[in-house]
Image 1 (cartoon, rainbow, N blue to C red):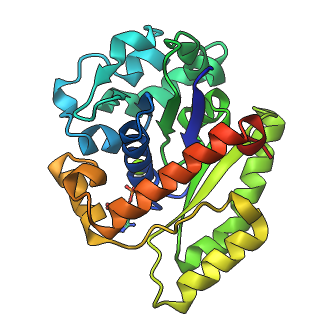
Image 2: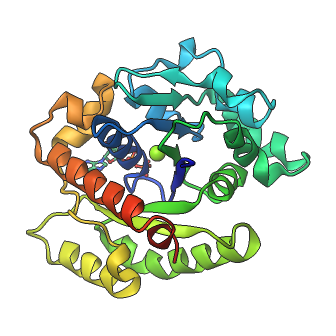
Length: 264
Ligand code: ADP
Ligand code: MG
């Protein structure tokens, strides 16, 4: 079976993309799946969050997407068994400009992923908070989106834009792009607003909303500074438990329903 490729994307920053990408990738790997995490954000938060110092990265996603080097040369193991990473680095910051003049500039990551080994089960791509060419590359390469939405007021205002963006991406770039799931982040059950956001997302996206909701949990914000995924930093904390369950549910949904669940 070819790998299921998911772009963790939302044009808003700070909504939990990187936290979700690292946590879900790690939890899937801990379930025994073979997972590759691709960090295509110039901020390289997924890279540092897995304990890799960007200064010692020799071959990065920049070399792959901009210079056309094979993905396998940038791929490296992480501290998590079954989880490999293609790291990002600062050179990627200028790549939006470098890519503009290139042929098939939207497809460069997609082409690179075609060279993947057959034994990967999942590829997760941590996208930057924009709709630039790097995000476009992630979306074009992916079969489906994994969309984190933060339970805050601005999410309510942003939902229309998000729906519009997905329609646009399908029309212009990837007609087969599905929604693998929506991840509700920073949920606080004491706040009416949190419930309101969840209600509104469920109304628009129905069963694309994944369970459980991810609670606001200070351990999740501490883990990256230790270079550890949450399920290793503090396996018993509420954030780790929630992400583990969510990854289990996502895995079931994608494997059972296969194409059906990843589309629509
Ligand atoms: P993005 O990649 O979308 O910009 P991040 O995953 O980096 O977002 O999250 C933004 C900030 O919020 C980070 O400091 C992160 O540690 C913190 N954070 C994310 N999810 C949670 C959560 N559920 N509870 C507490 N803090 C969180
Ligand atoms: Mg991020």
